[in-house]
Image (cartoon, rainbow, N blue to C red; front, side, top):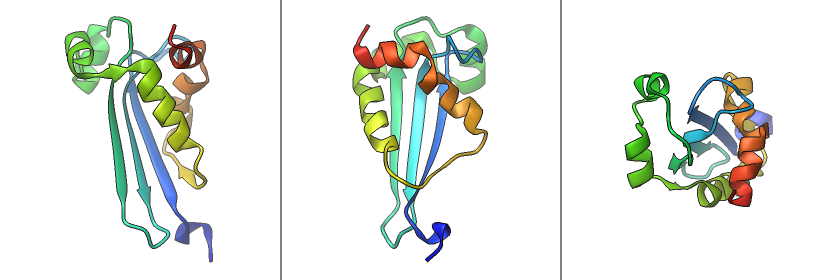
Length: 114
């Protein structure tokens, strides 16, 4: 059995900006496929705890107001994301851009609830 027959996880995020050291996750999607198991989708709308710049809102369509009103708390959502991302078989497109916010201080601060 090859890697393409195993359970795979696609991961994508939209953030507050393009600077990896400062960007915070606003939306995240994980899709689990393969391995003879039904597909599972996980979608998160997250309140990043900071203002979402107009340029970012124009790109992904999520405003600060919407994220605050409808989004999950960062620590809660990012904790669940971290647990889901520990599964084997993660596959990503433009990985540097999708994972940069998870390696920044903003990710660890959000997980700590600060």
